[in-house]
Amino acid sequence: MLRGLLEATGMNRAREWWLERQIKTGGSFPEHIGFILDGNRRWAGSNGLPYWLGHRKGATKAEQLLTWCLDLGIRIVSLYVFSIENFERPQEEVNELMKLYEEKLNEVIRDKRIHEHRVRIKAIGRLDLLPAPLQELIARAEKETAAYDKHWLNVALAYTGRSEIVDATRRIGEEILKGQLKPEQVDEKLFQAHLHTSHLPDPEPDLIIRTSGEQRLSGFLLWQSAYSELYFADIYWPEFDRLDLLKAVRAYQRRARRFGK
Image (tube, rainbow, N blue to C red; front, side, top):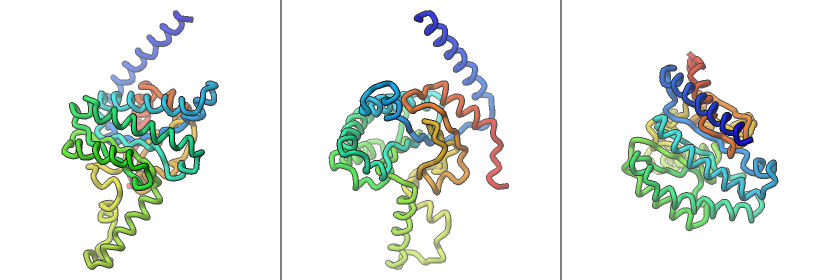
């Protein structure tokens, strides 16, 4: 069994090397990748483990993902971590998730990679729905990385694309009522400037990857994803590895992006 495992590991490394070589000479490269991290609970259930171990394994995988993306030179990473609908899960699970996010965010703030690679951290969503300690940590992470402009890490918490569009519409409406805007000034560019992703140099993901085999966006970056390429991986998020990321990027490079032209 050990020999077989070593052989499989060696084969995977060889495939990674070959795929990465193809990618670096394969044409256009995604600047912004969005990830829908799906399947933590199902992974735990399929392995006879409690649900919270699935979430913890998924959080560790997200840390590894950041390393892979930095190594590949991907400038913007957006993670769909917790939707507004997820608050409807059992309270015990929601509480455990909030504690896990606090723990991991504390680690991220101290992570040397964030500062060495000048990664700007930004949480997007209705953050006022989150526990006060988590809100304070988010504010600290955003403040400490506000001047960074080489890479961006966006974490969607208490987020849905519909709520983001509603919030942007409300802000524009308020500015019109105050006389700061005229209705005829409202266009796509102005609307986009009122979205949660307005801080990004490229708010529209080139590629969105979803795990667990589900083939839908579930409200992730609805406005921004109009021309995003979609890639669905038939594995649970804790099983996602660097080879899967390389496969997704290679699939992206093989698609002809015409943007309706």
